[in-house]
Image: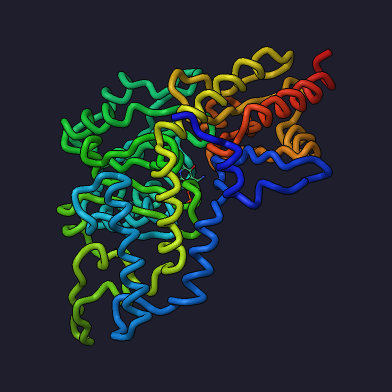
Length: 407
Ligand code: PMP
C-alpha cells in the first residue's frame, strides 16, 4: 500500500510551522519522533476524565485507568510478539531497561572473571551500565569491532565467544550510522555457548518488525518517544523464566506482595520490576502511537522511509565535498555525514537557518566516533511523515553549504 503522506502530515500539528522564516523540515527523528494528534488528545483526555492511581483503588476512575493502562501492555505483547503480557515491563526508556538488566541480572549472574560483549556501534546507554557492572563484579567488557562501512565483524564476534561470556548486548540499528545488525545470527551464536542476549531496539522498533519469539532474544529494550509516543516511557521485554529468577531492580510500592519490618516478599512479574506509581498517562497515550503504526503498517512505513533514504543517499553522494559516514549494506533511514572542511556544528547551524532540523555531534556514541577518528557528524534521519520535497530542500541546502569550502 502506498501511504498518503500529506494526509499523515495532517496528524502532526508540530510539522506545520515556520523556523527561521522557512517551513520546518524535521529530520531529527532518530533523536525523537513527533507525536500524532491522537496521542496528544489521549494524554489530555486521561487527565480531563480518568486521572487516578492504578492497581489499588476500588473506585470507578481507578478501575478505568487500570484497564486502560493494562490495555497498552496487551498491545505491546502483539507489537513485539511476546509470549505473555507479563514479559512486558514499563520503564522510563531504553536506558532504564538496559540499566535494569545490567543491575538485576548482573547482580545474580555476573561474577568475577566473566565476560560481557557489546559492539563498537553502541549508544552510551548500552556501554556505561555494563562498565559499571564490570567494575563492581571484576568482569571484563569486550567490544566487537566493525569495518569501515560501520558493520559488525561477525567472525571476530564468534572468536570472542568463550565459556566465560555471560551476556551479549547489541544494538539492533545504530542511531549514529543507521547500520542494521544481524541480531538473529548474533543471538543464535551467543546462545550456542550459553550466553544471554539483550537487544537495544531503540532505533529499530519504529522501522523493523520485532518478533521476540522468532529472534529468541532474552531481553529487548526500547523507548516510546522514538515510535510517535510520549517521552519518559520505555518498554523492557524479558523472558519469563529470567525475569522471575532475577532480583528486583528498585524497591517500593507496587513491587511487593507483603512487607514487614523483618522481611518483604515480592510481587509477580511484571509488577516486581515496576516500583512506584508508573507513568500512567503516557502509557495510556502510547496506545494511540502503536495503533498509528499498526494502521499504516510497518512494511509500508519502511518502504516509504527506504525510498527517501535511497533518493537522499544518491543525491547527497553526488555533491562535491559531501562525505558519508557509515555506508552499511543494510540501514534504517539515517544518513550521517560530514562536509569537507567544515565543522559538523556549523553545518547544523546553517541547516537550522534554512528551517532544517538535524542532529550534530557524537550522537551519544563517542567510542564509535573515535573508531572513525571523528568528533562527530551531521545526522539526518527520516520518518514516515517526511517527503521527497523535503529531501530536495536538504540537498539544495547541503549543496550550497558544501560550495563554501568545495569550489
Ligand atoms: N540506544 C539507542 C540506539 C538510541 O538511539 C537511544 C536514544 N538516542 C538510546 C539507546 C537511549 O534511549 P532513551 O534516551 O530513550 O533511553
